[in-house]
Image (cartoon, rainbow, N blue to C red; front, side, top):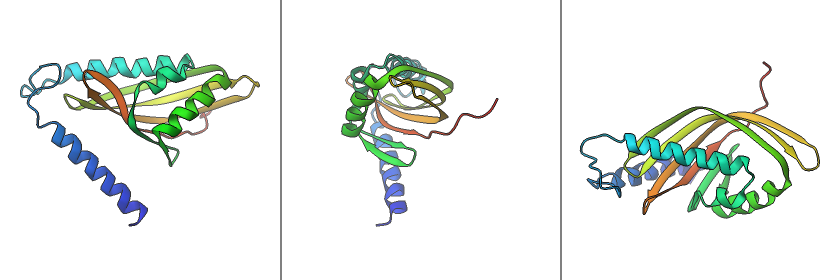
Length: 167
């Protein structure tokens, strides 16, 4: 099977799973989905997004990892990263940093149902390593959040890094 077909199949299966999860008439919070009001999902996921931002900027690898489901997968600049790779990479990368400054803007959260949501935003990083190297980048990020047993964590993410634009 070609890589393109595999990606399309994965996307279709993800949509089918999310749609199937939404057949349940109530979420774990006991709120009725029939009313169509998923504003509580937006506020809960927004809090989770900012918790991730806080863990990132505090260079707290364990707190970042705790916001990922074990089935987590990420596409970073076109490269697939598994949960194990992300966990190991965070544990190696975070201690090598002196400063991790990142501004997140244009945050949009789209509830897909009572237990799933997509959060997207633009980031602008300015990172200084302990050896004095400056790493700067900007780009879009998308997180697919899932709630299990009342806890929101990231199931899938995508981020693309580009040089900072001249201002």
